[in-house]
Length: 199
Image (cartoon, rainbow, N blue to C red; front, side):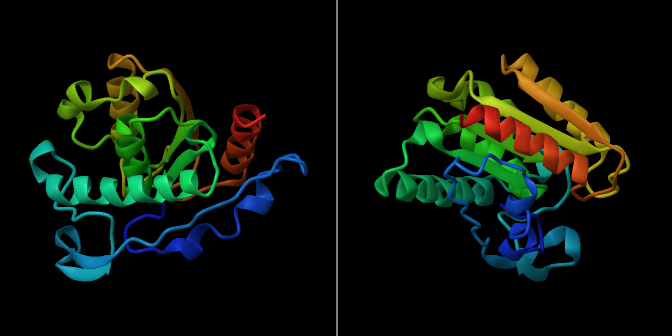
């Protein structure tokens, strides 16, 4: 899932760079978020999974976040209907999309293969303990963040990792010398994680 103001095209070029084994059959699904006004960007209409007013707990668009989680659940259900077991599905996203991958993945009622949050953050953290799915209490989590990220500060990445660990999750955490983007080393680490996860 793409970040705020971007679209599915952002990550079309990533799969060939992952270095996954040629015999590993993987289908990639790149959804587009709907267009909506975004408060933090002066109300401009852009593609977004939910509205953003800020990063504080009171700034979070709970209604929008939960609506987006329902869309993501529908995407997973569609893949399951196509014959892909839930425990072979990885939810992944960048920035706002990464935040949604964590939010939806940790609440999904069936066991997933993994959850990947790139340059994202934990949404509605106070609700996680009560809402976490027992099926995904031990789901594999890959989290990565840039040390020079001006959009989603590194401190939010650290807080996300700490919040997840305090909730009992194990996090495969990585930092890279980069701003709000994806780098070659990160893509290779993702590829290694996926190859081990889906082997």
